[in-house]
Length: 110
Image 1 (cartoon, rainbow, N blue to C red):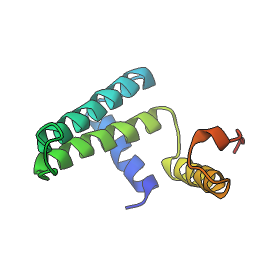
Image 2: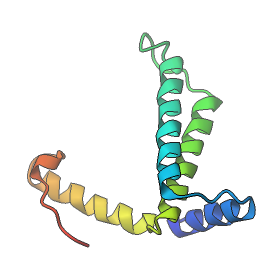
Image 3: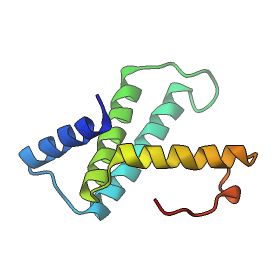
Image 4: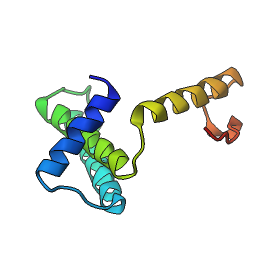
């Protein structure tokens, strides 16, 4: 499924279930869900003492995080496909300068 379809699917779901809210709340929700991914990884690795034991919970937490990211993008009217293309081009420029880090990045407007 392409990003436009994913964004449309989430938009339709949030509209249908009256789950729309301001971007500030969506950003907080995304942060919370990302924390839950980190917590699940800690649990899967017994707090870093072993290799991850992949389970269904990590898939669900990643799904929650993905949903939250898409809902945030929708609330800000950001096309995630375009955003991804822009960031991949930015990383390509950085890597061509010898580093993936932001220290070599010069701001370029789309």
